[in-house]
Length: 187
Image (cartoon, rainbow, N blue to C red):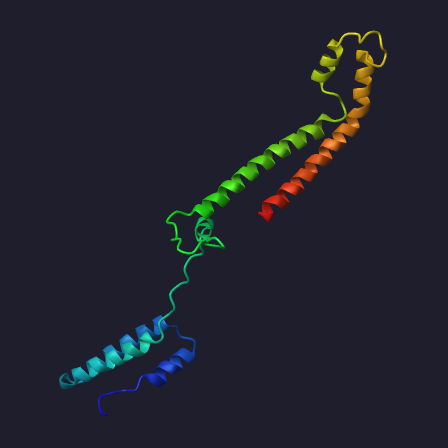
């Protein structure tokens, strides 16, 4: 019909040349304003229809909204649901599962820190016998004259066993690190 235009060819040409929807919208508005100024007064209604048709066509090419931001660690934990829920049990308003997991991880981290401190202390001590133990053994009286139970003999035995005791304590703490991590992962 007279007074109408088919905007599809120039819109498609513009998009094929790499134009964006927002630029297309600006160009269409400018074209409709130009068309409205060239159209006589009795055809203003036709110009308005052209603008409406262009706007309808442009609404098909609107840019997609930006994706939502990634959820935080707390939001991911709060979204956790138990694997089994008893029939008839309503969902809780409070994230008890997330709170339990966080508490378990905090306690486990604290225990691993204490174990690490003890491990470092044993490793730094070396093969020497602690001074407190030496003073206690020195305070032991003469055990009835027996050479094996004299303080000097006991100190010598302690010094002989110190490297083996230290190696055992270090191996035990290393095993505890591995077994506790496995127990935590297992649940």
